[in-house]
Image (cartoon, rainbow, N blue to C red; front, top):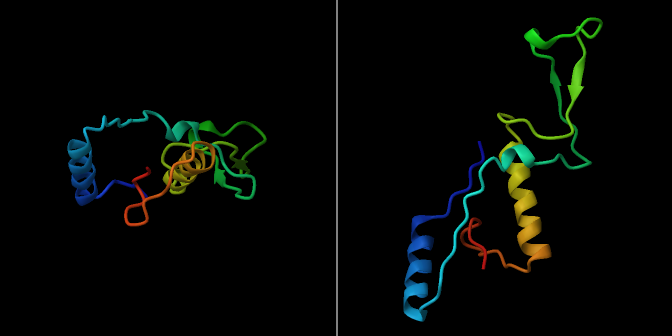
Length: 104
């Protein structure tokens, strides 16, 4: 699984800089964000039907997913890429090259 977490050393540095310069810090916790992740157009994900949800005349067919489902291996990576696009391209943040979880 791809779960991005800021390094403890990076957090300590941010706290030290903020304390020295008297900055105000903000952090966010995005709940249920994974469920709002959409698939990119060039990535197709298919999955077999669950045995308890097979409808008549659809046995042996697969689903073509348009949105992410919780538990998919690709979920965290797709959501992170969407977050990076928003923070960098729309809001003008810069990626910290040492720690990919830090934007400034």
